[in-house]
Length: 225
Image (cartoon, rainbow, N blue to C red; front, side, top):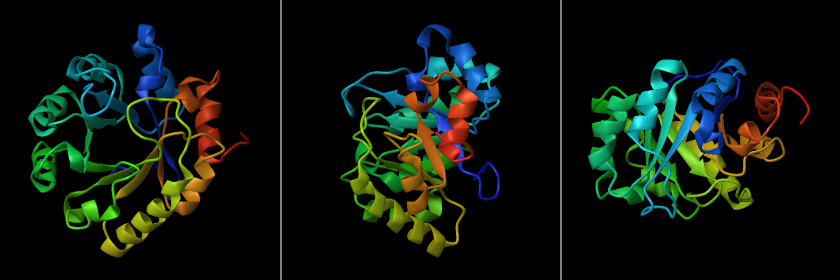
């Protein structure tokens, strides 16, 4: 699993919060600013009440960005679309247990394309949903909001879940990234990190800031917020 460095928090700005009239420039800016991954939220208007974008956006941006594409598929059913996003340039493909009947098979499919496989846990999704597929998982993403829209408030109720997952990962002995997405800011990030997260997905906290580099450093706790 790609990491940003020993003990260093990985920051993945979410493209959903970028200026869509200048996506190429936005992607270049966060790369220069020190982002580790680019997070891409794919919404179908069915699994979540919103529609974002599809494989053509990834394919268009891929030649202009060296960052790993961390692709969160909020699609139901998800399995028929895995290959399209893999071919479009995804490096990580993350799916929800609720988005298909066979999570194990979906994770196998992602890995068959040579991609890192991830599972996303909604606020009401229990950690038991992934207990028997940890051997196929490279990333666990904890949603600290209900998925579908940016700008929501962080749910502190998810902190014990992050702590439980940290224990599960450590006990497994596998290099699994523990990511958190939803309401992440310099105020909430320390709590997520203290609970065990090592990766932060942030939309408005980065793309809504005047200085992307300072915003990313603030999320890592490297500079005052």
